[in-house]
Length: 227
Image 1 (cartoon, rainbow, N blue to C red):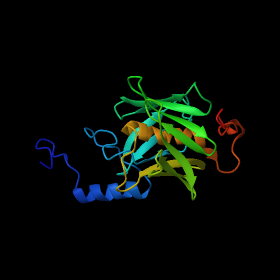
Image 2 (image 1 turned 120 degrees about the horizontal axis):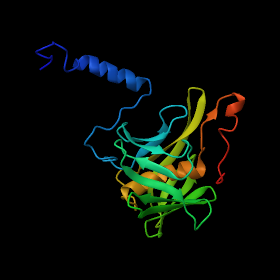
Image 3 (image 1 turned 90 degrees about the horizontal axis):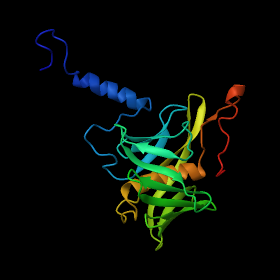
Image 4 (image 1 turned 180 degrees about the horizontal axis):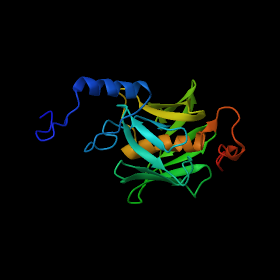
């Protein structure tokens, strides 16, 4: 049925009109949310971490271009503790400071079990699995980063780019698994948490205004303790 038999109200949008509206949203840089009933990151951990609004919370965009999950903290900054949630509020994982080492964070599952630990070493990051065994290293390579397995094989690429939105600029980070390569030696949510960990350890905690801003906003880009 295309319309209500009682009031004749349209029940389904015209497919052409819907397609045009969708195209307009995407052309403006907008993103649609993952459909209900589809599990988060069903297509794998390849994703991009960004903000949908200039000073909004971080979100993960999946390889299909859909919003997979959102990240919340105490004030929107990329500063632990951070919680990654599904659209219905379900906790997927948390990222907290790793007390056993400086400049390090650990991803934990909703049940509190460790997923992975990420330790900043120089310009890179050492990656450990849930048992805290070294499994990979994130190393600088030709303007981006390579995730290299402990045995020396490249597993994925990871990079960043500044994006300006509404007069504010922030760094967006992305993870792309190597096509046809070996599976990542991390659980799926741990691999996704790697992107958030890199943002925390290497990126900006908060967007910076492009040009001079009001005095009351002068402290919005202050670095956090990891620096």
